[in-house]
Length: 311
Image (cartoon, rainbow, N blue to C red; front, side):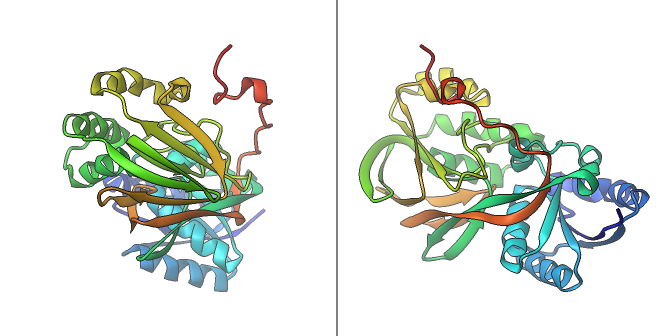
């Protein structure tokens, strides 16, 4: 079936990867019978305008870029009541990993034609900087400093840039104290980080919250308490499998709203971008976005969920 499409592309995503593969993506979409208009974004604000134009023209919006662009487009499409698809073009493409969209752009193109319409939750970071929606994980602490380093680096490492950032940050990290209020219940965490997850993945494939779902109306709150640098480094590889949650220093809870503060300033990062400053509140908008995706997997029974420690 022919569909009218508006491809909103960040040409600089993935170090220029999105721009390089765009002609092949356009060709594949047209060969599938679709009416395709492509427009590069000049900024995230410009992306909002492009989405508004597309919805007025009754087009399905295809977000092509990194997680930051995909999250921004998702928020605009959700607000306008439209429908969207995703073709990955960034370095990490963590949202695609979380929902089963292939990370190679041309492999993802068929989902524009065959994808199942699913309703996806959005997280929202609210601070003095305003309300900023996100799809992935909002985090503070060690994660913030890693992201700051990633933004500054000029190394061309692809998705491995996040692993580089984490390993380089360990040497200078000093533990922070975080005040965390989960659905009205306060607690204090001294240690590495606090992350509030919608999709469960970040950093180019890290499964920080392995049981998180973008369709359950809940956020997974992952806190990592103080440990030695050596212990942290030894457990770090486990985050790629999601088994780090078995470490006694890691706690995972679910929530609908989380209030965050810390004993020193941190920028809040989500989907690879700074989205606010402390103090902030993180909440969830359930079923906020209509999206063409692979069929949803069947929920795992509680006794085989990755977040359940082995007996």
